[in-house]
Structure formats: C-alpha cells, structure tokens
Image 1 (tube, one colour):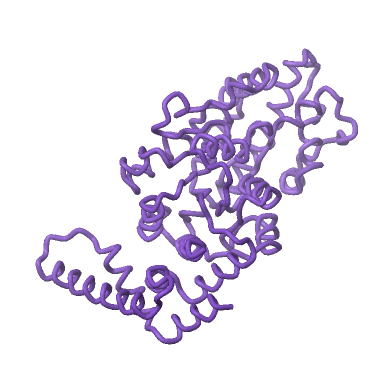
Image 2 (cartoon, rainbow, N blue to C red):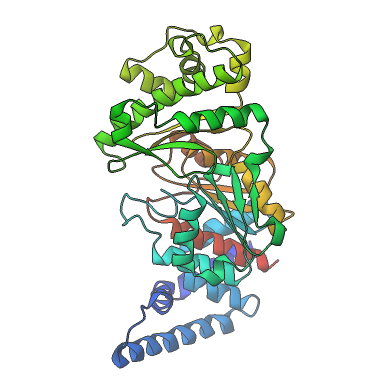
Length: 416
C-alpha cells in the first residue's frame, strides 16, 4: 500500500494541475520569433523546474518518478497506472498503435494526429520505448504523416516499425535486410492467384456507379475500395455497401477461376452466403440492400469454403470494403515487427478501434503480452473486450490521455 499512500500524498499536497499546465505549455510552445513570448516561456520553464524540484526533495525514494507523474499524469491516470502495475507487475515496454480513429479522429479533430499525442510519442521514443504503428493504410501514407509529425530522425532511428495494410507488410527502418518484409510473398500460390485476379478486374469490371463513386486504395496486396465522397456521409455509406456486395461476387468468381469451376459463379452466391454466416455486419448489409443469396452457407462447396476460410472480407461502414488474407493480419505483422525490434518479452499497450485491432488485443491478453485500449466510438466487439479486461476506454480524439497513463505505468514500474 506504500505506493498508493505516496500517490495520495502527491496529489493531495501538491498543485499538480498547475504543474501539468506548465509542463504542457513548455512542451507544446510553438516556435515564435518574439522576445516577449520567449521570456514568458522561460519564466514558465523556471517555475516548472522549481515545482518539480520541490517534489523530488519531498519524496526521497523515487522523487524523480513522482515529479514526472505530477507533471504529466492526472490523479486518475496515475492511480489507473498503479492499479495496472499491481495487477500485472510490469510496465509497458512497447506501444502498438492504430492510426485512424485512434491516434487521430475525424470526430472532433482535423483528422491529423494532435500535437500533444505526437509530443508524447516523441517522449516515449527519447526514453527508449519501441513504437509499432499498426494500420490498414498503405506504407507510403503512414511514412508520410509520421515523418511530418515525428520527424525523419525519430522514424528512422531503428525503434519504430510500421505494420501496414493490416499485416501484409512490415517496414522497420534501420535494420538492413529486415527493413522491409513483404509477408504476402509467403502466401500460397492459390491465394496469390485469387488476389491477383480480383485486383486486375475490380475496377474495369465494376458497374459504372461504383467506378464513379469509389476508388482503389493503393495497396501492395489487399484490395480496398474507398468512397469518392466524404467518409461517414450518406453517399459514402451507399457506395461502400454496393462495393462490398460487388467485391464478394468478384471474389467468388476469382476463386472459381482458380479452382477451374466457373459455371456462372456469381449466380450461386457462395461468397455472400459464406461471409454473411460469419459476420453480422455483412449479413446486415445484404439484408439492407436486398442482396441476400438464395444459397445457404451449408451448401457452399468444400473447395470454395476452404479458400474463403483463408480470405477476409471486411466492411467499414461508409469508409471501406476490403478483402485481405486471414493468414496475414495485424497479429502476424506485430509479431514480425517485435522480432525485428528485438522485443523478446513484450508487454504492449495496444490501442485500436476495429476488429483487426481486436485480434491484436486478444493475442496480447492470451499471451500475457499487454493490455488493450480503445476510443469510446470503437466497434462493439472491441469495446466489449476492453471493458471486460482493464476498462481502458478513452474519449474520441483523446489518445493522449491513455498515453499519459501508459507513461505513468512505465515510470511506476521503474521503481521496482
């Protein structure tokens, strides 16, 4: 109970709110060419140092840790961190972070990663924390905004890895031959043939309304249809529903071609029946659009089902319709990234909002390899998992709050 007593003393006896305000001002002060502003920054820095020194002197055992906690974590964040340390006996040693609707959100931000979040990631990096960015986006997109936000030096320092296209590839700058791993090249010839056929036909064979209403994301392997309308809008919703149905039919035709069974495959509805049986969201789209198959899932031939079981069809409402390999997912990508980074005994903070992130959270829970956190607008299955484990749910656009808690957990674990 001694650490709990120390935290109570810290937050009861010291004005930690003002200390955090000083710290935030010093950390996020924008570059300006103003002597008055710079003098104000310097005065704030001096006040911050004095307040932190006071705490260091008041806590002979772990004074530096308690001063850091007071400057960066709220009372609730610090006590949550201590509860987690009491539960698991260790601190976070790697960050595994989704991007869209997790680090950044279109809900109440400009859809860029907030400066506060970027600064916290930089702080973790400076203290030697490996960072795995785990996203469904293309590599070039992710590299671009990471370099813009964190700086080229951080991204290429050797302890940042990018799992892209939901696990089809891993990019870890500074690791020689292991810098870029194209995991999809290890898939079977049959799966590669299916994806090659889908990709080559997805836009040329699409109905005109789909060709005009959506575009193909520039992936290396996955096939992702994105709307040409504002994400989340009614028009995006409608076009992605249609795109999902079209992708399933095209997938079925491509599987039939690989199996040399192409006798009017789209009329049979094998893919629609198979994926609707396993995913209530897909079933809901088929019902809403009146595109339910006449075929029953039990009537899907074994040869088709065997390939479907290795291929993922994903629906992201008003955002994307996608097919990917179930043999390649974010878990496979994260494991590959951790191997390159040399993280042999991970205890990760896994932050995400979608079903692909849920796989990583479950992997972490099942292997005592970390904890999961999600924004409050995450998919229901993700929220169910997070609430059933450590209840680490944060407000939309406030990933920084969870990162502050993780920082507190790391500092408390350093006390031993």
